[in-house]
Each structure stands twice: as structure tokens, then as C-alpha cells.
Amino acid sequence: MPHLTLEYTNNLDNFDPAGALAALNEALFDSGLFGESDIKSRAIALSTFRTGVNGTRRAFIHVRIALLSGRTSEARKTLADAALAALQGEIDDQPGTELQLSVETVDLDRPSYAKAVLNG
Image 1 (cartoon, rainbow, N blue to C red):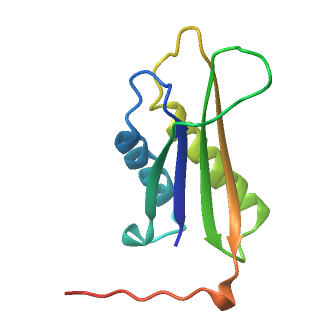
Image 2 (image 1 turned 180 degrees about the horizontal axis):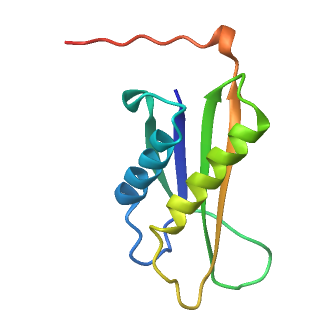
């Protein structure tokens, strides 16, 4: 744990999702809340999206961090802030584009979560 999902609109210039995932994983590890191999992340490019109702050129990146339940609100907020800072460090200027960045944390039900690690 955790599972991190990065969704981004495919109209971003010079965005490196692999680099962003590396920076996000590092931020999560630096929090001291997780073991190094417990951090799992993935990026999903969005080709169909809409922001708002007018024709302004817009883009967004949203990070969802799914955690086992039991973390305090303060710990979750600190983690979200660290992830947002890491993400901001990976974004080039987007001239002519309004770019929205957001991070959320969500709880996974600890009693019903199942995991196995297989070493081949």
C-alpha cells in the first residue's frame, strides 16, 4: 500500500508521466509512511475529457492515492501536499493552457483488503 493513480489529459506539452510517477513515488517514500516496495503507481492518459463549458484550452492532472484506512486527516493532508509539490516539480509551463493539478487520498477498507507477494 498505497496505490497511486495519475490521470492526465493528453493535450499537455512535454509531460513525462514516467518521470512524474518516479517523483511521486519518491515523495510517498519520503513521507516515512510506506515501505519502498509497497508503493504502486500507474499513469492513465485521457484522450476524451472536458473541463468547464466554454472553449478555453484547459488540461488537468489528478492524482488519487488509495490508502488502507486508519490514517489521520493530518497525515493524509501532509501526504497530499507532498504529492502535489512533487507533481508541480515535473510540469513544464503550458503557454495558452489553463492547467489544474489536484491530489486526493481515499481510504481502502482495511479488513477486506487482500494482498499476496509472489517471489519467483
